[in-house]
Image 1 (cartoon, rainbow over the protein chains, first blue to last red):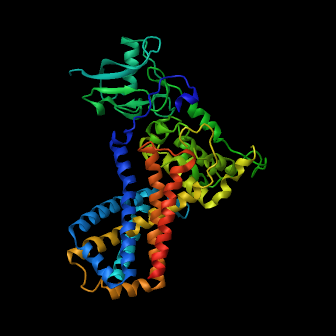
Image 2 (spheres, chains in turn green, purple, red; image 1 turned 90 degrees about the vertical axis):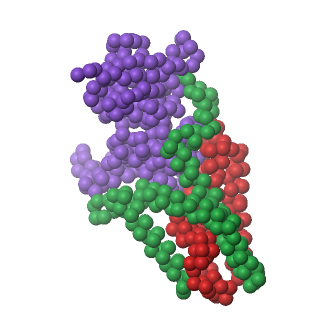
Image 3 (spheres, chains in turn green, cyan, red; image 1 turned 135 degrees about the vertical axis):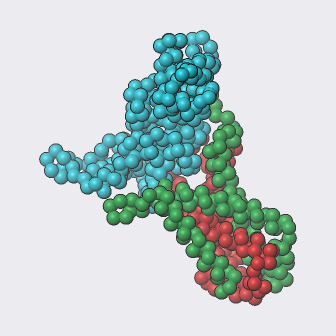
Amino acid sequence: MREELRRPGYLPPMPRTWWLRTGPYRRFAAREFTSLFVLAFTIVLLLFLLALSRGRDAYESFLGWLDSAGAMALFAAILAAGLYHTITWLRLSGHVQVVRLGHRTAPRDAVTAAMVAVWLVVSGAVAYVHIWA
Amino acid sequence: MAERRIELHVSRYRPDRAPTPYVESYEVPYDDDTVVLDALNAIKDETDGSLSFRWSCRMGVCGSCGMMVNGEPRLSCAAFLRDLAPGPVTVAPLRYFPVVRDLVVDMEDFLEKLREVRPWLIREDEARDEPGAHRQTPAQADAYRQFSMCINCMLCYSACPVYGQDPEFIGPAAIALAHRYDMDSRDQGRDERRAVLGRDVGVWACTFVGECSEVCPKNVDPAAAIQRSKLDLAMRGWRAVWPLGRRP
Amino acid sequence: MAGASKPRPARGEPLAWALFAAGGTVAALLLPVHAAILGIAYAAGWLPSDALSYERILDLVGHPIVKAYLGVLLVLPLFHWGHRFRFILHHQFGIHGARGVVAGLCYGIALAGTAIAIFILVRI
């Protein structure tokens, strides 16, 4: 690629494992990889609803799987990845969303704090409907 | 008081002597005020006059002295040896740019990209709010002020792994400066810049690693400029890249 | 993008990114609570005994608002994954598709998942 540009000078190619070499790059890669667990969650949720659509027996057998150690391990990984996605996403949203207050702008940390509050409220509402409503 | 000394491992590149860069070590005295740039100048003055590097203001406003200090993009005039002690300190040319000699890199790619985004006020008409002047409220000036602080030091390009892999990527500073003019109430060139930013090597190549904003010595936050440009383009939809059809 | 000498107009990117951003926000706000309830709280016995009973959940999912909610919860994060995974393949593993093959595969899987999700939700 650099050869095509015909620039003078010495430029080594970027190593394939560039994303393992510094702390910030590793944390970036970890953040990106959480998307695989987002996919895993979607698949599990689809299977849950599929079981529901198939009737009581299928659904209760799915609940039986949820009780297993394998399922708990999978969900622990999904939850950990999900939480890492959430905290990085909400922190970064402070960079993207400009909130005007009169003729001043809200500081980035305030936007993040507001997003965290929204997250907690929404999670609470979902939990209420899911468990008790 | 005993004189403090620290070792610098400086990357040298002398294509007339060797095909690849090599490291030379120097030991320099330092005190609480000595920065890496001072050390390099001391080396050049007293030990090795062949050492080449860029610098100018030595106070963090000209953007000339960017280089890799201990593996991070830094302004050498802002990297204090007291913070890097006991060392050794590695000094290398800015990453992801071709090295011309020692610590000097070829900047042409960046300069080309800067030109592409048209970093100046674009007007469709010559109208002014009053003879010879535009008017701008403090709020309007605030809208673009932070992005105008860019000193073109290119540290953000050295931090950006997308630029490292895909050198066609326009890059953080160019996008930040495009955004600076897009957000300026006096500017009327937003559509022209949208066509440049909306290309596959424009904002869409960015994956918000965020390191550009972390290394920026002037708190420009180019990552914010890029994401806001993505948001702007997404909201305008497909129409945003239509102007590519006509030659500006 | 990779190795392209001529920058090309990116007609699909605004939409792809919009879906990615929406999906990322949905996942950020909603994935943890759902994963905690279904995956941890249930097996740990922290939920009321009838919370996930067949009758109750069937009744809940039957509500059109809940179905719409589940539609959003299933579909948007799929496009978040597709977009991110496409860039993971490109940047972390050096897999560049010629003429957008990789992108097509990633968004294609997301579209397939969308179809499956709609099919299942309609059946309930």
